[in-house]
Image (cartoon, rainbow over all chains, first blue to last red; front, side, top):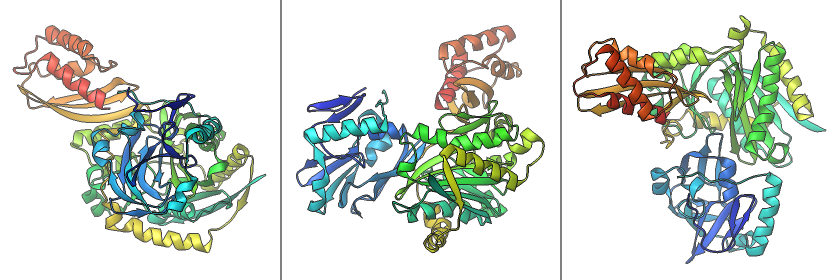
Length: 156
Length: 357
């Protein structure tokens, strides 16, 4: 098993929450800002709750997606749902090739190889609702308790 | 007390039996009450999972010839043949009215189904995560999705199920595989008709189901109708769901095995070896070989040896060494010869098929 976590991280009930990322806690999406763009993925609690993915369908690069709408749809053995946009954005790149190679990428390495999309944020005001650092860890501790989730990742 | 709107639509068109819960889901706004929809289709059709590739999974030519619509749903899982002998039980709920964990959510959703069957004298139980079983046979599956601001759970009250049509509409590599699908459905799927010897009256079963829902949810159930907005959205979705663009979108869900139920999968594979091609159809029950059918274009003497191998490995898991050892015993006992095909080749082909399932 390999989980890419470069910096300090909270490990709470098996769930890894890296401190250096930004989060939309309610939508369970992590955000890594890089040179004007943002890379997004499912958090550890999100991939645990969904279960082993069996399929994913991305919206095309170039698509503009409003906050809360689907950047991709995800199917696990027990559920279908959106991977929601934490803020209004344009899709620059998807990790389709990665998931075609291994559909379990987000289950194995949610913060690394299992990233879903790279986007360009279109509404700076919406970014203020994201949380990071101590605040993120505090919110996630509460959310993990509320969801009563115990995280696990798929082995290789 | 939680108030739940119940909309019993009776019989509707095939497409509407799918579009209606999507419409209620997409029209849902925070603060709206939870809804339980009850609906059956007037005519048979094939429903496919959201990420399935219609051309790869369904015999579209047969469906066209038989006048069976094929309709993609925004819920996962596989292709299924549906007709008026099921009542679909569709829950469209606010997120906070359901347990956060999917396992708990299914447990809640399945409970009234199980209790309805039990009240009819059928020994049903929940097979986690999302099956209902009667002594090892499935009596309907369930699915979950997030649609707009709502959480959706779908399933059915299984009055009867046409195994032959179900096996007929799937796209399979061989007719032998189709026979195996039919046999497996017959062996591992059940219905109210099968369990009771008769089909109970719809209204009586629905009333039992609603009583069980009220008890499970601790809710007051209030009969209602669709809103104008939901109706309008359903009409729009009917059109979308019937469009070629919607049906033929590429999936990405590659199901190499046909899931009969949670514990039973059927798979067909072919492996090339120096002496020819080994075709394997295997049914796996809880990881073990439950039924096996070998064929191919190799030479094997005596011919009865193939059936002996099929018999010898039943009950085994996908351990190549153990499979090889058993098959070698059969070779020795029958003095078998198969130029270019070794016992290890059979073991490898069978193990690969079992692993795929």
